Structure formats: structure tokens, C-alpha cells
Length: 75
Image: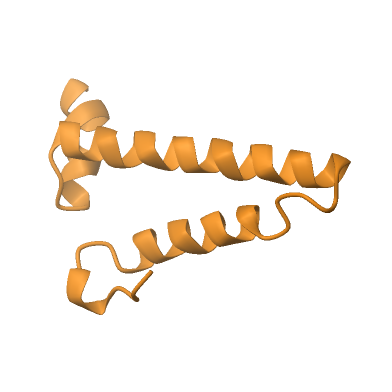
């Protein structure tokens, strides 16, 4: 049971537990930042005009090109 919870999924994406934890935690931070930017934009439309969409594109690229660093687009 513990193996299934802590080991199997990270291994399925070719990562160790702590490597996967860091990747997922960094995603949580980016999602939080994108949500905050969208909320600020909702209240004051002149602010954070492209921040949320830029962060979402960055996250998509990180997932799409995960494990293939040479194929990742330049930022």
C-alpha cells in the first residue's frame, strides 16, 4: 500500500519521490500565482493582462516536454 502511494507514480514518470515532490510543489506554486494574477486581473483589468495565460503556457510546456529537454521550446 505504501509503495503504491509513494513510489509507483513517481517511478512511472521516471522520477524519485523527492524529485517528483519538488516538481509537483513547483507546479502548485505556479498554479497559485496564475490564480492570483487572474483574480487581480478580474478586479483591475489593466493589471496582469497576460500573466495567468503565460504561466499556464509555461506549465503546459513543462508537462508536454517532460523528460525531453532538447525538445522543449526556448523561454
